[in-house]
Length: 152
Image 1 (cartoon, one colour):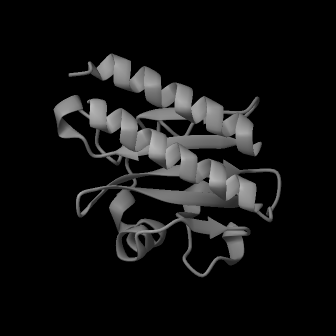
Image 2: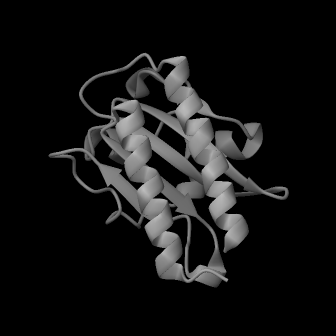
Image 3: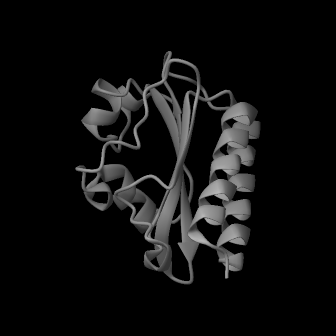
């Protein structure tokens, strides 16, 4: 069984790699894995570009009650938001107002029948039309996250 520290290191490398691949401002993975002390209200790993504030310190928001997390729970597929301010399913206002996110991709991590968590890709400079290769990179990251969890 992998240690919590080794899992965090693997997830950190995954988030840093995804950040570079898609040219994002921030990438995070949130997971509910109690055996390793992971809870979705906290961030397991976060990649950030230069000058981008960490979102990992924000743990007061009830993540599963947000419109976007509810959408992931219901739809069980990637949510692409080119313009968060005008999105049908509103991201948390704190994400936009405090952390400056203008566009995002959210991808569910599903284990069995359970939404165990998600990967978030944030872009801060402006709204952004996400390209198919960006979505493909997120899909690859989800597959890698599942492989890491399978070894846990």
